[in-house]
Length: 192
Length: 368
Image (cartoon, rainbow over all chains, first blue to last red; front, side, top):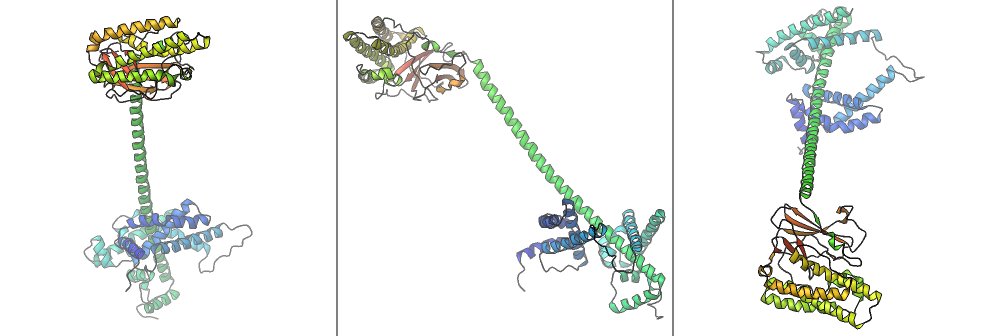
């Protein structure tokens, strides 16, 4: 196998840091990629706040992929971040256009099974879950995050959080989920 | 289908989570999905599970985003603090610098104001038509007695009028003075300057006397003669101060009388000096006297003058010693040579071959 390029070595170090659960590398990536993302976003009618937001989103996408093990290190990290940021920004621009169509522009409702009303309801419930996660304490928050977001196995969670075994985590996860659902129901019921 | 998988499988929490997380193999997935088409309850459960998953993921993202923002803010704050600290440090350094500079400035000023100032303006205020001696000083190290210069004479350089007057061979007098000086140097270095200067005056006087006597005295020539007499008077002023300890202008209304008077006085003075206690005391180079060139702008308003021949000498006692500053409008030469103590309260500054005597009230080591 050919010796990896220097930039890949540099990136490998950052990737290893992120894989080990240390998200301090995100900070480094933020500063390294800020200029290129700024030129992309500002050139396309964005602001400084948009630059920060888009870059952070891109870094989170990278982080998620790394944590889930779905990231393939084929190109420079900066290339991946730039491509992700570009997608995020273009999607946002499209959404802005949809929400605030220019004069004379006809907005078409995208095809789908759900109606806008249903979509709104779904969003509301998702928001309620997010808020419930704020309220739920540890270790439930960690267990649910590790299981649903980072998609780790019960065994891995047991090791990470110091549980006796996977079964303990399994039963704890069940309790946590029920608690979360209760909080969600409470939040949605209060809103109604 | 009535197999185990298709019957309300969503009641199995593990299976439901695995389904939304897409962790089930394709074959099983298609069976479970098929059941959802026929079961509203299961479809609803899957939808709820998807919403929980979306909510948790959104929370996870916002959590890490918050962490990242916090870290960036902390980093920016740290950078800002560092810049702040650096600016504060720089400001302190500048302030301290300012304080020290001000203190230094005021110390110098105070030092100056503490010292008594003697402005030797008497030379300027000599009789009308007389010129003051030009002394252009600058900071010089006090060295041993230098060999007197023979290539130039003071009169030639300081006064174009005198320079134009070729019939008075001052250079001859100078070279004679030099020879005498060498002679004296061999026997008594202490007396060499006195002897040389006296001899030189003698030569100058006799030359001038001869020239004045042999030709009818025109008004033009009288003026020139007066100009020359200034130079002599300057020298005489120096010797007068040796004795009297002050600068005294020479008389020159009646030129021949003045010459005769000067001649006899100088002879008398030289004779006295050789025997006196003054000559017995060896002149020593004074190490704490600094001669420097001053800026005319620094002169008090009352002293400033457009007269290019004017020269003022300021004497002050500083921490480093006695400082003699010469102020002049026209600077041709920045050479001053020697400073010697002749008594405890008077010094000689040698400028080229000429010597100016200054009286220092309070003495060299006393307070002024």
